[in-house]
Length: 326
Image (cartoon, rainbow, N blue to C red; front, side, top):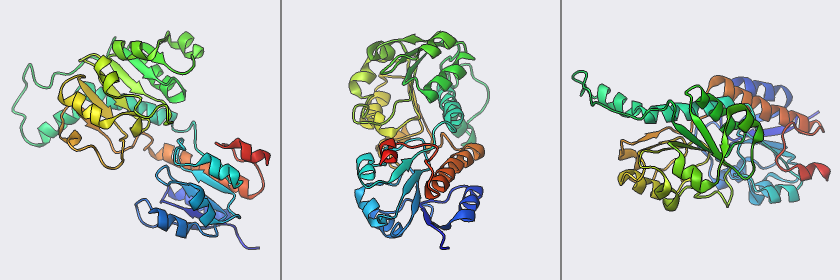
Protein backbone atom coordinates (compact mmCIF):
# COMPACT_ATOMS: atom_id res chain seq x y z
CA UNK A 1 0.00 0.00 0.00
CA UNK A 2 1.34 3.41 -0.97
CA UNK A 3 2.32 5.59 1.98
CA UNK A 4 0.67 8.97 2.48
CA UNK A 5 2.90 11.90 1.55
CA UNK A 6 3.87 14.67 3.97
CA UNK A 7 5.74 17.88 3.22
CA UNK A 8 7.66 19.65 6.02
CA UNK A 9 8.36 23.30 5.23
CA UNK A 10 11.48 23.61 7.42
CA UNK A 11 13.86 21.34 9.31
CA UNK A 12 12.55 20.39 12.78
CA UNK A 13 14.18 18.16 15.45
CA UNK A 14 15.47 14.89 14.01
CA UNK A 15 13.53 12.58 16.31
CA UNK A 16 10.28 14.21 15.17
CA UNK A 17 11.16 13.59 11.53
CA UNK A 18 12.17 10.01 12.30
CA UNK A 19 8.76 9.38 13.85
CA UNK A 20 7.02 10.94 10.87
CA UNK A 21 9.04 8.78 8.45
CA UNK A 22 7.95 5.59 10.24
CA UNK A 23 4.46 6.22 8.93
CA UNK A 24 4.71 8.33 5.78
CA UNK A 25 6.78 9.35 2.81
CA UNK A 26 8.33 12.62 3.98
CA UNK A 27 10.07 15.45 2.17
CA UNK A 28 11.68 18.30 4.11
CA UNK A 29 12.72 21.69 2.81
CA UNK A 30 16.54 21.38 2.94
CA UNK A 31 17.13 25.14 3.05
CA UNK A 32 17.10 27.01 6.35
CA UNK A 33 14.79 29.72 5.07
CA UNK A 34 11.12 30.42 4.52
CA UNK A 35 9.88 29.33 1.11
CA UNK A 36 8.42 31.93 -1.20
CA UNK A 37 4.71 31.68 -1.97
CA UNK A 38 5.46 30.24 -5.40
CA UNK A 39 7.90 27.69 -3.97
CA UNK A 40 5.45 26.66 -1.26
CA UNK A 41 2.64 26.15 -3.77
CA UNK A 42 4.91 24.01 -5.92
CA UNK A 43 6.20 21.90 -3.03
CA UNK A 44 2.81 21.09 -1.49
CA UNK A 45 1.28 19.73 -4.71
CA UNK A 46 -0.23 16.28 -4.19
CA UNK A 47 0.61 16.10 -0.47
CA UNK A 48 -1.71 14.44 2.02
CA UNK A 49 -0.44 16.59 4.87
CA UNK A 50 1.74 19.64 5.44
CA UNK A 51 3.79 20.41 8.53
CA UNK A 52 4.13 24.20 8.48
CA UNK A 53 5.79 26.96 10.46
CA UNK A 54 4.36 30.25 11.66
CA UNK A 55 6.28 31.92 8.82
CA UNK A 56 4.33 30.00 6.15
CA UNK A 57 1.17 31.73 4.95
CA UNK A 58 -1.37 28.93 4.49
CA UNK A 59 -4.26 30.38 2.50
CA UNK A 60 -6.71 29.23 -0.14
CA UNK A 61 -4.13 29.44 -2.92
CA UNK A 62 -1.71 27.16 -1.08
CA UNK A 63 -4.45 24.68 -0.17
CA UNK A 64 -5.74 24.60 -3.75
CA UNK A 65 -2.19 23.99 -4.93
CA UNK A 66 -1.91 21.08 -2.50
CA UNK A 67 -5.09 19.51 -3.84
CA UNK A 68 -8.31 18.06 -2.41
CA UNK A 69 -6.53 15.02 -0.95
CA UNK A 70 -4.72 17.25 1.59
CA UNK A 71 -6.35 16.54 4.94
CA UNK A 72 -4.30 18.49 7.48
CA UNK A 73 -1.86 21.36 7.93
CA UNK A 74 -0.09 20.99 11.28
CA UNK A 75 1.54 24.20 12.49
CA UNK A 76 4.82 23.86 14.37
CA UNK A 77 3.74 26.74 16.64
CA UNK A 78 1.15 27.68 19.21
CA UNK A 79 0.17 30.68 17.08
CA UNK A 80 -1.84 30.29 13.91
CA UNK A 81 -2.19 33.80 12.49
CA UNK A 82 -0.49 32.42 9.37
CA UNK A 83 -3.61 30.32 8.69
CA UNK A 84 -6.65 31.40 6.69
CA UNK A 85 -9.14 29.55 8.88
CA UNK A 86 -12.14 30.23 6.66
CA UNK A 87 -10.38 29.03 3.50
CA UNK A 88 -9.24 25.80 5.18
CA UNK A 89 -12.64 25.08 6.71
CA UNK A 90 -14.34 25.69 3.39
CA UNK A 91 -12.03 23.10 1.80
CA UNK A 92 -12.39 20.61 4.65
CA UNK A 93 -8.74 20.89 5.71
CA UNK A 94 -7.96 20.43 9.41
CA UNK A 95 -5.61 23.02 10.92
CA UNK A 96 -3.70 22.30 14.14
CA UNK A 97 -1.21 24.00 16.46
CA UNK A 98 1.01 23.10 19.43
CA UNK A 99 -0.41 24.77 22.57
CA UNK A 100 0.70 24.19 26.13
CA UNK A 101 4.16 22.69 25.69
CA UNK A 102 5.95 26.01 25.16
CA UNK A 103 4.36 27.90 28.05
CA UNK A 104 7.25 27.38 30.49
CA UNK A 105 9.97 28.15 27.95
CA UNK A 106 8.23 31.28 26.70
CA UNK A 107 7.51 32.55 30.21
CA UNK A 108 11.11 31.93 31.29
CA UNK A 109 12.37 33.74 28.18
CA UNK A 110 10.05 36.64 28.96
CA UNK A 111 11.52 36.94 32.44
CA UNK A 112 15.02 36.67 30.97
CA UNK A 113 14.26 39.62 28.67
CA UNK A 114 12.82 41.56 31.58
CA UNK A 115 15.85 40.95 33.80
CA UNK A 116 18.37 41.52 31.02
CA UNK A 117 16.76 44.84 30.11
CA UNK A 118 16.36 46.00 33.69
CA UNK A 119 20.01 45.23 34.51
CA UNK A 120 21.40 46.24 31.08
CA UNK A 121 23.08 42.86 30.54
CA UNK A 122 23.33 42.97 26.73
CA UNK A 123 24.81 46.45 26.88
CA UNK A 124 27.25 45.40 29.62
CA UNK A 125 28.28 42.31 27.65
CA UNK A 126 29.12 44.42 24.58
CA UNK A 127 31.10 46.82 26.76
CA UNK A 128 33.23 44.09 28.33
CA UNK A 129 33.84 42.29 25.03
CA UNK A 130 34.97 45.55 23.42
CA UNK A 131 37.69 45.89 26.06
CA UNK A 132 36.24 49.11 27.47
CA UNK A 133 35.97 47.97 31.09
CA UNK A 134 38.77 49.40 33.22
CA UNK A 135 37.47 48.65 36.70
CA UNK A 136 34.54 48.95 39.09
CA UNK A 137 32.71 52.28 39.09
CA UNK A 138 29.80 53.32 41.31
CA UNK A 139 27.69 54.67 38.44
CA UNK A 140 28.56 52.10 35.77
CA UNK A 141 25.49 50.58 34.03
CA UNK A 142 22.95 51.49 36.68
CA UNK A 143 19.72 49.67 35.98
CA UNK A 144 16.24 49.24 37.41
CA UNK A 145 15.17 47.21 40.43
CA UNK A 146 12.85 44.30 39.66
CA UNK A 147 12.06 43.15 43.20
CA UNK A 148 8.90 44.62 44.71
CA UNK A 149 8.00 46.48 41.50
CA UNK A 150 4.70 46.32 39.60
CA UNK A 151 4.39 43.88 36.72
CA UNK A 152 1.61 44.57 34.27
CA UNK A 153 0.43 41.61 32.19
CA UNK A 154 -1.55 42.28 29.02
CA UNK A 155 -3.32 38.98 28.37
CA UNK A 156 -3.59 36.67 31.38
CA UNK A 157 -3.80 33.39 29.48
CA UNK A 158 -1.53 30.37 30.01
CA UNK A 159 1.73 32.17 29.22
CA UNK A 160 0.80 35.45 30.89
CA UNK A 161 -0.17 33.59 34.06
CA UNK A 162 3.09 31.59 33.92
CA UNK A 163 5.10 34.82 33.73
CA UNK A 164 3.14 36.23 36.67
CA UNK A 165 3.94 33.13 38.76
CA UNK A 166 7.64 33.48 38.03
CA UNK A 167 7.49 37.20 38.81
CA UNK A 168 6.08 36.46 42.26
CA UNK A 169 9.46 34.99 43.21
CA UNK A 170 10.70 38.60 42.95
CA UNK A 171 7.82 39.73 45.17
CA UNK A 172 6.37 41.72 42.29
CA UNK A 173 2.89 43.20 42.50
CA UNK A 174 0.79 41.77 39.63
CA UNK A 175 -1.81 43.76 37.74
CA UNK A 176 -3.36 42.60 34.50
CA UNK A 177 -5.79 43.43 31.73
CA UNK A 178 -7.67 41.01 29.51
CA UNK A 179 -10.98 40.64 27.68
CA UNK A 180 -12.11 38.54 30.64
CA UNK A 181 -11.01 38.16 34.23
CA UNK A 182 -8.84 35.26 35.37
CA UNK A 183 -10.18 34.74 38.88
CA UNK A 184 -7.99 31.69 39.44
CA UNK A 185 -4.85 33.80 39.01
CA UNK A 186 -6.32 36.55 41.16
CA UNK A 187 -6.78 34.07 44.01
CA UNK A 188 -3.46 32.28 43.47
CA UNK A 189 -1.20 35.31 43.01
CA UNK A 190 -3.19 38.21 44.40
CA UNK A 191 -3.30 39.71 40.92
CA UNK A 192 -5.51 42.75 40.35
CA UNK A 193 -7.71 43.11 37.27
CA UNK A 194 -7.47 46.62 35.76
CA UNK A 195 -8.44 48.38 32.56
CA UNK A 196 -5.88 49.04 29.87
CA UNK A 197 -5.31 52.67 30.83
CA UNK A 198 -4.52 51.81 34.43
CA UNK A 199 -2.30 48.94 33.28
CA UNK A 200 -0.24 51.36 31.20
CA UNK A 201 -0.01 54.03 33.88
CA UNK A 202 0.89 51.81 36.83
CA UNK A 203 3.21 49.15 35.38
CA UNK A 204 6.92 49.34 36.07
CA UNK A 205 7.30 46.42 33.67
CA UNK A 206 4.64 45.69 31.07
CA UNK A 207 4.69 42.28 29.38
CA UNK A 208 2.51 41.47 26.37
CA UNK A 209 0.78 38.11 25.92
CA UNK A 210 -2.20 38.86 23.68
CA UNK A 211 -2.98 36.93 20.48
CA UNK A 212 -2.46 38.71 17.17
CA UNK A 213 -5.88 39.67 15.82
CA UNK A 214 -7.14 42.76 13.99
CA UNK A 215 -8.13 44.32 17.32
CA UNK A 216 -4.71 43.72 18.92
CA UNK A 217 -2.58 44.97 16.00
CA UNK A 218 -0.70 47.98 17.40
CA UNK A 219 -2.16 47.28 20.84
CA UNK A 220 0.80 49.38 21.96
CA UNK A 221 1.29 52.54 19.91
CA UNK A 222 2.28 56.14 20.54
CA UNK A 223 -0.77 56.99 22.71
CA UNK A 224 -0.17 53.95 24.93
CA UNK A 225 3.57 54.55 25.23
CA UNK A 226 2.95 58.15 26.32
CA UNK A 227 0.74 56.88 29.15
CA UNK A 228 3.51 54.68 30.53
CA UNK A 229 5.99 55.76 33.21
CA UNK A 230 9.27 57.23 31.99
CA UNK A 231 10.94 54.55 34.14
CA UNK A 232 8.86 51.71 32.62
CA UNK A 233 10.11 48.74 30.60
CA UNK A 234 8.07 47.12 27.82
CA UNK A 235 8.51 43.39 27.08
CA UNK A 236 7.12 41.70 23.96
CA UNK A 237 7.44 37.95 23.43
CA UNK A 238 4.04 37.33 21.81
CA UNK A 239 3.68 38.74 18.27
CA UNK A 240 5.58 41.62 16.68
CA UNK A 241 2.66 43.55 15.15
CA UNK A 242 1.10 43.93 18.60
CA UNK A 243 3.54 46.84 18.97
CA UNK A 244 3.85 49.79 16.59
CA UNK A 245 7.59 49.49 16.13
CA UNK A 246 8.07 53.00 14.71
CA UNK A 247 6.29 54.47 17.71
CA UNK A 248 8.40 52.35 20.05
CA UNK A 249 11.59 53.55 18.35
CA UNK A 250 10.53 57.17 18.96
CA UNK A 251 9.57 56.38 22.55
CA UNK A 252 12.96 54.80 23.28
CA UNK A 253 14.89 57.56 21.55
CA UNK A 254 13.00 60.34 23.30
CA UNK A 255 12.88 58.53 26.67
CA UNK A 256 9.09 58.27 26.92
CA UNK A 257 9.89 54.91 28.55
CA UNK A 258 13.14 53.61 30.03
CA UNK A 259 13.66 50.48 27.97
CA UNK A 260 12.27 47.51 26.08
CA UNK A 261 12.98 43.81 25.64
CA UNK A 262 11.83 42.33 22.33
CA UNK A 263 11.75 38.77 21.06
CA UNK A 264 9.42 39.51 18.15
CA UNK A 265 9.19 42.28 15.57
CA UNK A 266 6.58 43.86 13.36
CA UNK A 267 8.11 42.82 10.03
CA UNK A 268 10.38 39.91 10.88
CA UNK A 269 13.23 39.48 10.28
CA UNK A 270 13.58 43.19 9.45
CA UNK A 271 13.75 45.73 12.26
CA UNK A 272 12.60 49.30 11.93
CA UNK A 273 15.75 51.29 10.98
CA UNK A 274 17.51 52.66 14.03
CA UNK A 275 16.17 50.18 16.59
CA UNK A 276 19.31 48.04 16.65
CA UNK A 277 21.48 51.08 17.38
CA UNK A 278 19.72 51.87 20.65
CA UNK A 279 21.27 50.75 23.93
CA UNK A 280 18.00 50.80 25.87
CA UNK A 281 16.48 47.84 24.03
CA UNK A 282 17.35 44.15 24.39
CA UNK A 283 16.83 42.20 21.16
CA UNK A 284 16.34 38.45 20.66
CA UNK A 285 15.65 36.64 17.34
CA UNK A 286 12.20 35.13 18.11
CA UNK A 287 13.65 32.42 20.35
CA UNK A 288 11.16 32.32 23.24
CA UNK A 289 10.45 28.60 22.73
CA UNK A 290 14.02 27.72 21.71
CA UNK A 291 15.00 24.92 24.07
CA UNK A 292 15.80 21.39 22.96
CA UNK A 293 13.01 19.94 25.06
CA UNK A 294 10.34 22.44 24.06
CA UNK A 295 10.99 22.41 20.33
CA UNK A 296 10.96 18.59 20.33
CA UNK A 297 7.69 18.54 22.28
CA UNK A 298 6.19 20.95 19.77
CA UNK A 299 7.24 18.67 16.93
CA UNK A 300 5.74 15.64 18.63
CA UNK A 301 2.34 17.31 18.87
CA UNK A 302 2.44 18.27 15.19
CA UNK A 303 3.52 14.76 14.19
CA UNK A 304 0.86 13.11 16.35
CA UNK A 305 -1.80 15.32 14.82
CA UNK A 306 -0.77 14.27 11.31
CA UNK A 307 -0.66 10.58 12.25
CA UNK A 308 -4.14 10.73 13.78
CA UNK A 309 -5.80 12.67 10.97
CA UNK A 310 -4.32 10.53 8.20
CA UNK A 311 -5.50 7.41 10.04
CA UNK A 312 -9.03 8.77 10.26
CA UNK A 313 -8.97 10.04 13.85
CA UNK A 314 -9.53 13.58 15.16
CA UNK A 315 -6.33 15.47 16.06
CA UNK A 316 -5.31 16.35 19.60
CA UNK A 317 -5.40 20.07 18.83
CA UNK A 318 -7.56 21.77 16.21
CA UNK A 319 -7.96 25.49 15.56
CA UNK A 320 -10.90 25.13 13.14
CA UNK A 321 -13.05 22.50 14.91
CA UNK A 322 -16.01 23.22 12.59
CA UNK A 323 -14.28 21.13 9.93
CA UNK A 324 -14.47 18.05 12.17
CA UNK A 325 -18.28 18.23 12.03
CA UNK A 326 -18.40 17.95 8.25
